[in-house]
Image: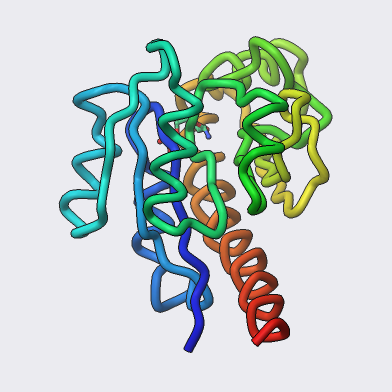
Length: 201
Ligand code: GRF
């Protein structure tokens, strides 16, 4: 059976990566995680890949030629699509045009709220609290050259509770939305790619 080969690009703890790893064989059946790229050394995301027996690479984001090295790794591992999971960089238009497959990203708010340049990690949740929204959530979207600007694929709402801190809200959004949405989105995109592959055979 054909399955899509997925790469995950991470900059942090990799809890979204872990949700994807744990979903293989369950929610995620049309794709498998074939490569994890950590954008700096010593990330827990890399340790999670190694613990799961998944190929991993460290490609420092701040070094010259980062995007070219990522593209080479994706080609070497015959990757069909790329998932940004807690990745803090912004990929260039050139990168997006040179990578032939889809790229999806998970953002911890209901886009178009609290997104775009400067909105990442805890800052997103602090902005939601400062504004006083009663509902926030997470969004999985396709990646284009506009930060958090691509077509929306899935969203899930999460309530804001009285007394929430940014940390508590982030934890609830991760648990109730991100870790559920990303495997679902990975399955949707993988199944679409498998259908396309089968139609060309
Ligand atoms: C979290 O703030 C998450 O909301 C966002 O990226 C950050 C790190 O996620 N998507 P992870 O634990 O590294 O997956």
